[in-house]
Image (spheres, each protein chain N blue to C red):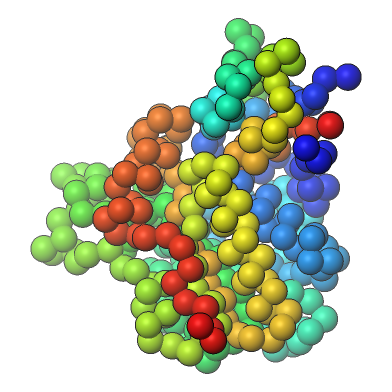
Length: 66
Length: 247
């Protein structure tokens, strides 16, 4: 199970998670979600489940599972 | 690291603009109320403006009143409900500091036992970014196209300082949402404001500086947060606790 569950359809591509991720584990997809935004994608190998993305996300995209 | 899950009270995606600080602030409010054990004993006065969008996704008891009526309506709610529920007046700067300035100041003057959360994005966001009293000198808006001229329209109003220095209220603080550290500090301010209400200490005002990438015509990642950190906080709106009663 991945450390972070990303609900892609909630993402609005503001980029706050990418800016504040200490491990640079977050990038944006090449395809689009239901609202027409490129959504956040988490690299599980780099992710340390620190929760910075959850803290800064305005739209509840992220759920930290461990 | 503990598990982190979005609060279940936010049932749908609230349609704020990408990069709007409101989404973070709503989550902080819900988390604070849940942690204080008042998740089913909460009434929010929802102001007119971008704050109105909260009702589309947040499953709380809410009252929507006339534009600017937050201070007065929250007073009525709190006097009716007494200790049975928390009352939050969730307002923007246009609502609390421009149109509802009289209500905001009078609620603080009476030291009503309510918690006011005012989101300051230095313009009237919902109507398309008009100049408000909190707009910075030189800032371009749709009604100050050459930048705000402070010779004719005055300097930005600082209502938290006004209330902290003039009235006998319980708590005044200003936070922001530019970084995880600041978000956690802001959550502490909101929680303190709600705790004051539970303890019956009186009026708490928490102003939160929020990015508005749509009406600032800026990139959310870089320009908006940098503008708050480099322009708003150092020159006009210092953050931190401005007043704690008893200190």
